[in-house]
Length: 116
Image (tube, rainbow, N blue to C red; front, top):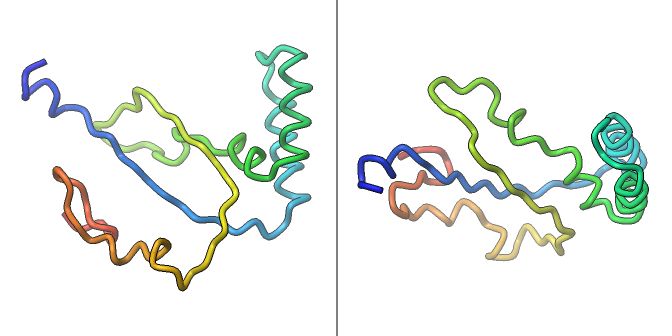
């Protein structure tokens, strides 16, 4: 691909830290989403149900929808998405969690506050 062809594509990386404030509510929402999936085979349904009951990060992953996060952005089409969710030992005082210090530009990336 020529540089002009590749410049049409952008990889957007987003990192979020979430606090689960109600595990029962989160699990119920994930189970509702799973039950609503009419294309998931029964064997996968059983596995998915067990996974979200056991692991809250897994429950959260079932509820994330990249299309919904993007909404109706003009001039943009989502081509591919992947995401993971994992439990983390969060310490807001630790340097590794200080997103505001990550104000380095990297190949045209945006700073953490959204400024180019």
